[in-house]
Image 1 (cartoon, helix red, strand yellow):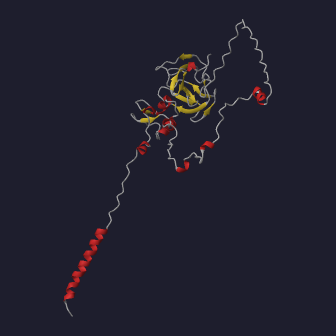
Image 2 (cartoon, rainbow, N blue to C red):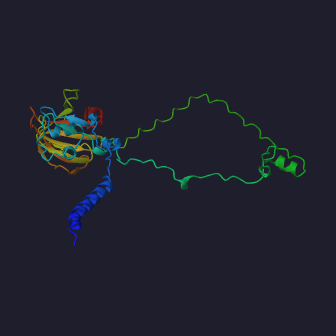
Image 3 (cartoon, rainbow, N blue to C red):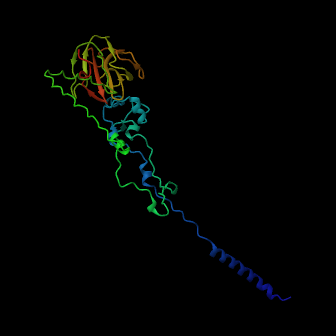
Length: 312
């Protein structure tokens, strides 16, 4: 047997393997390239941004209770909007949201999306085939409005004569001056309140911008302090410096009232009270004499109670 073919066998095998490897490299398809989309402007806009006017920066001497009072809020709502677990701990420089999230963000977060018109939504006007001269047209003569004369003329009868009514006699102007119409009673708005005096003593200090945020009413220790209107107690305690034992009643979304320097508080936070209900006893806590300091806040801003309380 000839040994020469055996020597060539390894060379042929190596050549065949090299050929197969070369073919595999040539036929290998490149890996697909996936382009990642960059974040769109609408996605970036979805992040809520609180307007500066809806934020309050905590200053030295502020408490959560005083900030709530100055903004006409329940301090528990304020704490909830800002994720505050301990109402006694806020930091100077801390920014707090003082508007309800729904009101501050403009209500609903739903965004209307424009949709393209599909072929099924397109309405085409039909085109009449054939001679368009056969289409019905209006007569050139104008249409006459219906009347008895027109009906008689159409029936070949003489026109009916109409009798015009005699002009009404005009009365001479009255010589006596007529009484002016009575002025209607001014209607109260949905949040307006008919206020009640919270105590019966003499007013010893009146409202003054920046100096006195309400009125001071004198009285005897233990005298009844009455709720000036229906509402809910949003604060009861002595956490506001300068107010002593304090009660704050929120009447609606616009008004709240404050009753300070009490000897004893008779209501709890969250309790509903009625107009004229006894809510505290007059005292001199954190004051130089026995008195009631009474405030009315309109949307958190102090207003003159004497412009709201009935005259006496």
